[in-house]
Image (cartoon, helix red, strand yellow):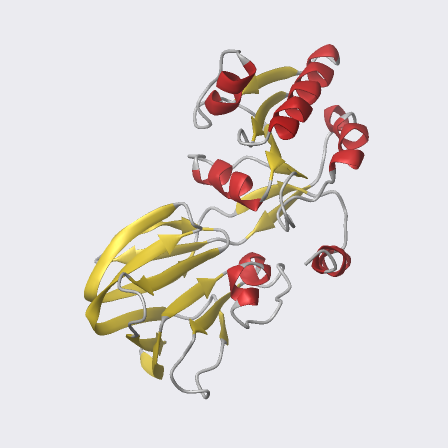
Length: 270
């Protein structure tokens, strides 16, 4: 089995921990390669995520590091996250539990799929999102106008500072902070959460991923589309975005930890 090791590089303790993992895996006879930025900090040679031929990616960092790693994959491979961030909803292991679990990887591991969403503009994909896509004004304190179209019919129209289009996985991220519900990640659905809507009647919507969903931006103020905090695309003032379930879900190593138990434990840290 070939392992790609990725570390957040802005934290010396995380880098030191990653070096220890590298040594343990190497001593156990694993084929270990390092992501380029991680390798540079460790003073070793590294590879790009895509084309590395790795069977699994071990990521030491917070949700941002994990999201960045997944965005660098051409074809998804299973990710095992070791939390070295603030809360780390995408990281299933804490550092004190990591070494014992890593030693079991050579005997195989189950995989959990997480739905991603694809945003399509003018027939061209803008990219895939594991947590959320954010439509937000480029001019602070200015509102945007949206129409939500489900199966060809207008379901709602509203003005707001922005709109979050979240996956169930992303429901514990920005969407939760914006007042959205916590959603079981086993569901396949789109969660829409308006940001500071003008009317209190504009509430979050949870829409089946089997439906045709279009977000229409109708504003005289320019907006950006931000995908997982990793990619920013200029939308202009008027455009339509098709929202679809991605053909390629993200893959995670399943450590058999109950989602709601994890949420309860993580939220106690906030």
